[in-house]
Image: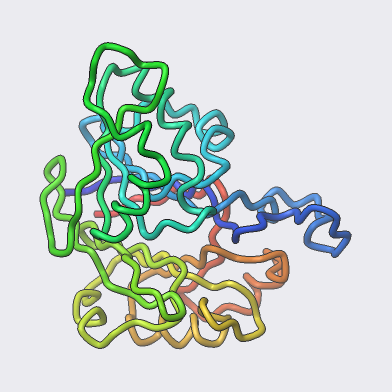
Length: 256
């Protein structure tokens, strides 16, 4: 089923501008160099929304994009820049009077339940806290008419999840893609792919690694995400091969 996607945040854990930095990217007046922490949201045709990760900028991202619904959340992993905005889900629980289901690996759901146990509760008509329900997933599942396929990835030595939804895949915080996971990425229309910086990093794709992975996966269009302030938007865009683009906060895509 077709859907739309908005990149809520395209930045790394520090965001851009970086506090205290006076590099050209951090001082840039180009809004595409303003990167909040990495997250995206899928807009279904029936009005429901599936959020990918709850970064610490979720409130600001929601205000910027006029979001009033989050109906489910897919978590890639439990690092702070991908989950510490979870408390901001309470606004969507309050507005829509719903418990929001969370999906991720068994380990990640356990970590979130340990960190944010106060929010993992059944609805009681009290909406002043997030009302959330964790679900462990390790194989394809159906959600609101979409097939969601977890894609196992390595983030350094940690095994985390990317996700394939229809002909779109979202792979953040990845340093290597197992062969079995590559087989799940055939025939993509849109790929969102980790590209931290130009220099190598032990837990993320660098530029050369990201470009090589994009060529191997061969999606019709690839958008780079989770970028540090080393990646100035215009300079990066000029450097990229055909079919690969620099993502930016607020970018909207249609997936058939």
